[in-house]
Length: 376
Ligand code: HEM
Image 1 (cartoon, rainbow, N blue to C red):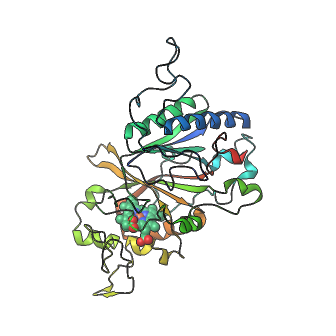
Image 2: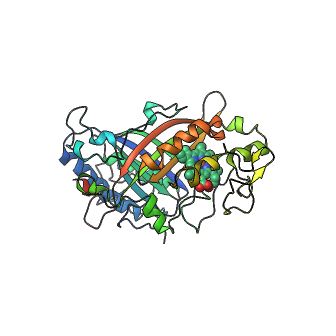
Image 3: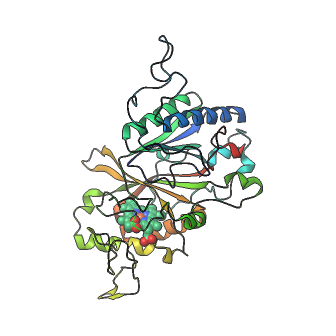
């Protein structure tokens, strides 16, 4: 079956084996008042339940309604299977804040982990590609199915929530299940080898799922945090660097994805093994800086996608990695690593972070509930 279950302890699209395509959109809510927000979340929940089953949205769908009215469903997914569609909803810090006047009365419910991400060295963030009150991540094995989901959810939100930014990812850059082959990023390297996998229940509880919260933060139990970074990659510069240099930058071989210290793809890197000019795994390699041993043992569930948005008018591809990671707490599981990488990672020279977002992803729901219900 190609249907991802909608109901459950956690939302779909996180530990779900990674699909091939993604369309993610951030929204700003334009209405005020808690009832309006809850109504929007209820409408979205009903639609998402239909979409993930491969069904049209609405009671009458794409063609069954009033002949003199616009159809409830836009129709471009008619005849397409569910394609493992998963839709994941998260809340940005601005949704809670009353700084622009009272909105939904949620100021007191901001989880401490839902911080304003700090400025990282080298950040070149574009306002129009960053932030947002809400995020909706749609992943599927068919791009048309993912785009159909976001389009119809945006349409349902029309007049209530405005799309702030959106991004299409055309290929997964990670694997989140041991049953999957490791895909490659646009630098040509296997990506996702040392990722957390759905099968590692204990590690997910330690590094991804929020649990044990009480009081004002209890609503996040079973949830997680979504870090989004649009990272442009300087493809043309990269393509002029030697194979040796490329492998030194990651600390892994290009074809096999094995650590430079030896073995095969899934061998553990040996950071102490001496080479000619220092350790064989360069200290400024991406893997040396991102490895749990350099980060107090923290791990993250990476679930990013390759993107290409045409070219930039100077003949260069506007391409890169739309980085998505799910973590239990971005203060411990993302910020320190990103800071270390921004300062020391040999890879940084080839990257530019152009968009950013941090969202609290509420837990999954049971039949009859709506997404985010625990917050209200
Ligand atoms: C590992 C690529 C950005 C965190 C890797 C690997 C590659 C890679 C090829 C080795 C294979 C693997 O284990 O998956 C990239 C590229 C990036 C990027 C091309 C930017 C365009 C980031 C960022 C973070 C990050 C922003 C987090 C702040 C990690 C982690 C690992 C990893 C935690 C696993 C390290 C280990 O346990 O060995 N990345 N990465 N990466 N990366 Fe990245």
